[in-house]
Length: 430
Image 1: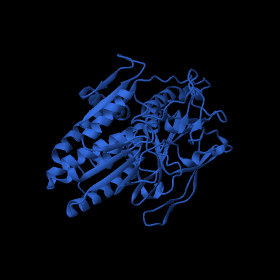
Image 2 (image 1 turned 90 degrees about the vertical axis):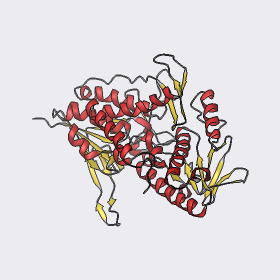
Image 3 (image 1 turned 180 degrees about the vertical axis):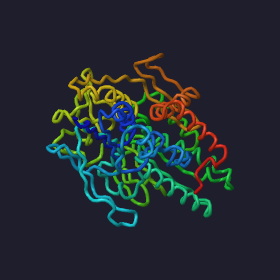
Image 4 (image 1 turned 60 degrees about the vertical axis):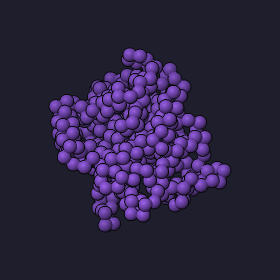
């Protein structure tokens, strides 16, 4: 009796968890393959909502998915660990040592064999090696980072309230993450006025810094100007064409030597894949550490290794630029590979991936939302805003829940979330 094919997926983000779920249901439950998901954190959180966790306007306990429980329900297994090496000769990935919170050694180095390896390690903000940024700034690339920022934010809020001082927040990066975080912080402090400090929102002094000529450079200029106008209307300062050269505990320094002072600094500029991927196992990577893949999402150096999502660089046959590192691309790639990987083990070729651009949405919390429609669907290339755009943005998360849990369970989760919002505080207080 031949053994089941071993599929190892590294990274439990949007693409990785969706792929593991689909393959677990179709191949794992039937014994055709053994599907293993590897991630260093025990829970999954939809990355586009990290700014709400950072601001404290969403209950992380109700939003996260425990890998171990989800795996047991969907026909795959979960291994905790972080990948640090790749042995293509023996078809094994290397998982690094892990320590317990008290500093003691919890797990030694381990190796996990594979017959097909899918790298789905996501992306992170790119500090470009600027002095002081890594030490002085908060990053919002993962759940632990978002929670760490929220803890620091609550401490600064206490200081601001007790001393009646301004709370200065400076966000570097005028892309979707920076813009959405800024708006969510305003909403959080507006809601915080109900808990005994009616002046707390007025003391929030937020500056959003963008090196380019406008916010949301990937969106149409109409969306950029409307977004900037909305942020300035709620009292925030927006600086465009402003280049940061370094940071320290006092704030960001511009290339003209001026200081942008801040009590809390956030770096949300640039995108790159994890540094350890650069040249790993002899695979081709670009300057952003992304693994270069063909239209089948296989690497040119090894057909048994795939890369999807933000850590992959795929240039469409009809295009000059690689696909953008967005949740939309990652979701479509996971669905495509999920449909064809089983047949690939039987000797059939994986069809070329074809991306369908449905547009992009940015949410300014309860204030507004904007969407640039893509090349497919109704009103191609148009722009939406207001309540419809807000509803469309919210539906992206609901669709993600449906893909992971099915319609019935996703509906129950939505009900529990709404009930919890009625019974508990609307913002994180402790």
